[in-house]
Image 1 (cartoon, chains in turn orange, red):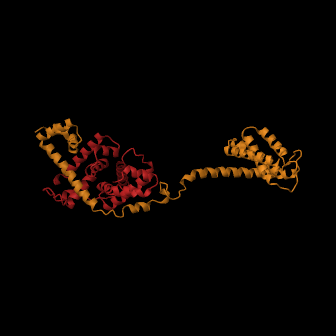
Image 2 (cartoon, rainbow over the protein chains, first blue to last red):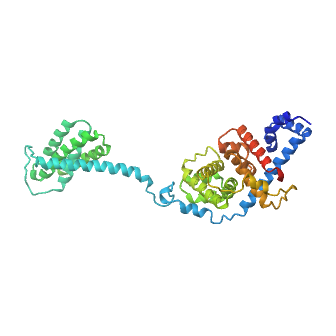
Image 3 (cartoon, helix red, strand yellow):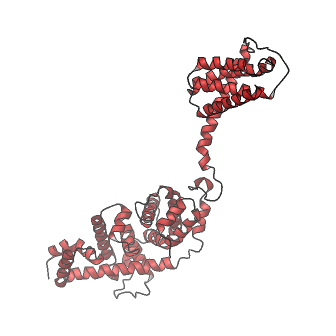
Length: 236
Length: 182
C-alpha cells in the first residue's frame, strides 16, 4: 500500500480518471496506483456511488414532474412590450418606427419653418412684383398656368440648389416672359408669378437651412423643365 | 429527424417565436432538474425554470451562437438560481441542519437503488447545499446532465482544469457528508 502523501497527489487525477478525461499516460498511472491503494480504490467507489445517488434521487423527482402546461405560463408572461422579435406574418410597426420618427421630425421642422415664414410673409404684406409686360390683374386661367408656374418654381429651386442662384432668378423671369402664352394672356400669370416669387424667396430660406442637397427636388425640377418645354412647344 | 437547436434559434430570431416552445419542451426537464438540484424545492424550481426560459426568450436576440444553445441555457439557469439564492439569503429554504442530520439513523447497509429513502434524499440535498454555488452547479451538470468537461467549461466560461478541480472538491465534500450512506 502506498503512503498518504502519494494518495494526495492522486486526488484530483482520480476525479479525471472517474470521468475518463485523463491522457493515456495519466490513466495508466492512476490505474497502477489503484491496484496498490485501497483508500483510493474506496474513494473511487464512493465517487461512483455519489453519482448514482444523485441521478437516482434527482431524476426521480424530475421524472415525476408534469410539464404539460409548462410552456404556457412563459408565453403568458411575455407582454407585447417585451416581445423581442418581429412577427413574421403579421404587420409590425418596428421597421417603421425610426424612419417615421425622422420623417415626423423633418415634417415638424418644415411646418415650423413654413409657419414662421408665413408670419414673416404676412408682416411684410403682399409681394410687389415689377416685371415688364406682366399685368397684376386678370380673371382668366389657363391650364398651362399651374404647370408652368410649378415648373418655373421648381426650376428656380433646381438652379438654386445647383448653386446658380442669380442665374436661376433671371431664368425664372425670362421663362415667364418668353412663354408662348405670355403675350396673349399676361394677367393669367399673376397668381403664379406671385407664388413663384414668394416660393423663390422661400426656396432661398430652405436652401439656407437644408444646404441645397435635395435630390428629389432636383429630379422634380428636371421633370418640370421637360414639361415646360413640351407645353411651350405645343403652344407655339 | 429532430430540428437542431441552432436552426430553431435562428428561426425564432427571424420571428417564428412559436418555435421557442419546441426548445422549451426539449430542455424543460433538464433545466428543471438542474434548478431542482440547486434549490431542492419543487415549486421554487418550477418557477425558476420558467424564469430561465423567459430570460432566454428575451435574451435570444443577443445570442450569437458562439456557444451551443444548451450550454448558454444552462448558464442562464445557474445564474438565475445563484441570483435567487443571493436574494433569498437568510430565508430558510431547507430545514435540515448539521445536528438534525446526525440524528437521522444511518443505514449502514447500502441503500436499495430502486428506493432511495427520504432520509438519504434529505441528506443529499443538505450535502449539495453545503457546497459553494459553483461546485454545486458543476457537479449537477456533470452527474445529472452528464455534460462533458468541455461543455461545463463552456457553460461557466472557465478552463477544463478548473472544472476538474471544482468537481474534485465537490465530490470530496459529498463523500464526507454522505459517508454513512456509501
